[in-house]
Amino acid sequence: MNHERFIIAAFAVTGINMVWLTLSSYFAMRKSEALADDLRQQP
Amino acid sequence: MHRFANPARFLRLAKPLTPALFWPGLLMVLGACGWGLMAAPAERLMGDTVKIIFVHVPSAWLGMAGWTGIAFASIVQLVWRHPLAGIAARAIAVPGAVFAAICLLTGSIWGRPTWGTWWVWDGRLTSMLVLFFLYLGYIALANASSEKGDTSRIASVFGIIGAVNIPIINRSVIWWESQHQKASITLGGSSINDAYLVPLFVSVLGFSLLFGAIVLMRMRGALAEMRIDARMRRMAAD
Image (tube, rainbow over all chains, first blue to last red; front, side, top):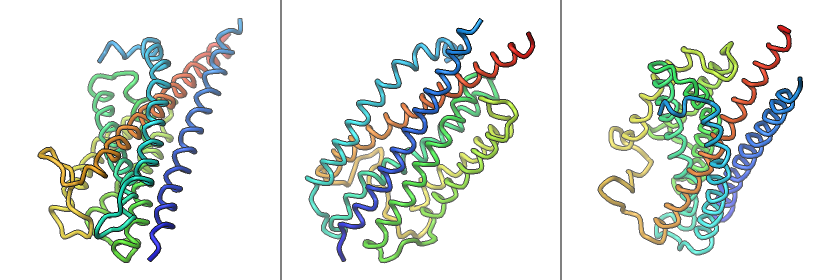
């Protein structure tokens, strides 16, 4: 059995999930912090 | 610990700590996975599929460590009313669920060429699947909470009770006949060859740092949302 495609699949699953988790957490944080800072500066 | 109960003090620490955890973690993960893929030799029985341990083992560790963190934070929230504990528990839930899912998927991908099947209903695999469903239940309960940025007591109690599954996962390969191999790394030592052990250690450490950075990002986001809510309420009252 060719093991290469299983190894690629396992690393791809991990990579895709990690990229999604990191980017979604980062952009959600940036968006919330920017909005909170904007509101704080409003009179 | 109570010193960091103040959100402002926590943010002063979390802001520099987020990139300080993220970038070394990313470098370690990329280095360990590259090292494992390119330089680790094929194993006698498993062949090249042994390379999947460099993503499977860290995700299993973080799936279990994540729930342990939720249980600890839930106890702190219920007993000491620590204002950040609920936020921390909530911030851990999604990354923990993602790592539990990665563990299940990569384990299944590993099982097909190694065991000849994608899945078996044995103690280790089933208890890990239960952990994933516990995460989904916790996320649903926490999101149903009326107080944004905090978890309800029910979610905290659920987080503590669910922790009973962690020792079950850990001991499952000893208590029941299992397709899954017994623990290769224990407090007494390791039965893994150094050619795999060193990159595996770097990978576990790197993924753990990334996990910490992601949890901090989610805590910072939750705290910012609380500030937005408080500001909106003040503006509505004026």
